[in-house]
Image (cartoon, rainbow over all chains, first blue to last red; front, side):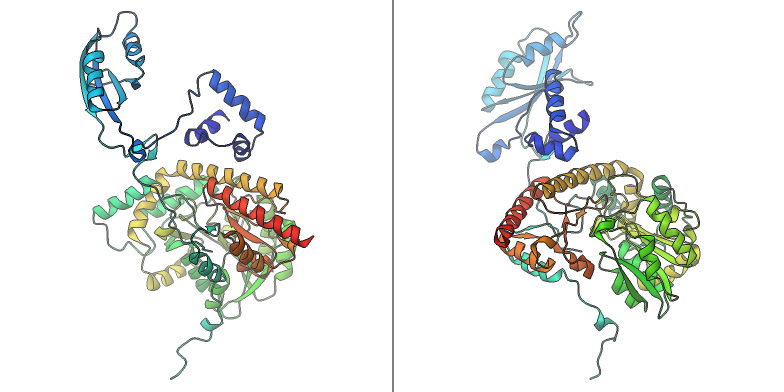
Length: 160
Length: 390
């Protein structure tokens, strides 16, 4: 049941609980309990909104930064990651296999703001060996959703 | 000038849906629940395979019966899902949609005067195809109290010495009815007793919500009397690719192949390559789409219950078939009124046979949001009708 609930709300977290119960064929209480449990267990970590900021006319600059670091004795990468993710402007931090260690995405109002964060804060951290900043030019698809176009129903309106 | 038309073709009625299509296409903000095809796009990996086959320049004919690899995959698919064993070399024919298969099966099996039993409400093609194949259609009217299943008694009652073929359209469009194994076993007895053949249109077989679909051809003694028709349109959301298939005894398939060979040549090559991938890597997609339809089905059933609209629970396809007899209107009047007053288009049950009178076909091949809006409008409409009728 959990997987079914999660699969559904991952795409539509705004659905009414009553409707979700009908669609999944269980009672409302079951859904409510499962949701509460999963929130407590941090399986559900939040209910966010996917926004196309370009369309909203709000200036935002996103960057994807490759970070190479020296892992810490006894703590591996976790300590470094924590130092980085605590900055509110950081959107995500992933530990990556391959030619660098941490992938950090962040958002700022201007190019300058982002560069400044990287040069002043990120690069100066102990254990950070190097950074490589990639600015995001256009988001085509995010969180499984195509951002650039809306699909219209082009089927013939009535067919047998 | 002489009359250029055949006497047969002029007797055939154009589809009853046309009238509604004309009205609804003039309206800007109408919501249609009248579509008989999936709302999903064909899964990308299947489309990708079609594109790849074009890039490779595979733009030639295939052999008449279809690509060998595709027929082999069809055989495997039917075996793993429905316990059917067909020899891909002689017992499977790839067609232009299930529709072509219906047509050529009837043309291969019927002589003038042979009676074809057609349970209704059902898809609009069986009757004209039977007529065009010189057969005589005989309608069996299915009943709501039987959940629109075909019973052995109804079948028995319709059989005459001229009866040759039974069309078995389950899971059913427009009712959503299915035939469970026990239902099939009962009619199989009658079929054997009267030495009939069966055209089993199983195009919606992947969309059943209670238990796995059972094919009548999997029952003992039935394979040699049955042509199974299936395809990719509903299961893999591939309507526009026009790809289906017929499976049956070599004796019949061989003759169908002749018609197909002379009239069609072969099914579209790009579609055939894409379909190979659909069968090899598409089981998960089919399952996901079924889950999604099932959620919508439950939602509609719940809404109908809430608004007190009588509707039996359908376990197949993607249609609901609610009863509107309480309003004292014909299906046509109700559907026209709903379209004009609330701009929601549904198909009157009568488009699928006279016994569809008093019912509507509502398709749930739409997003939940869409269905919600449409159902709100239907609810308003029937509340207004009830007030007026008081």
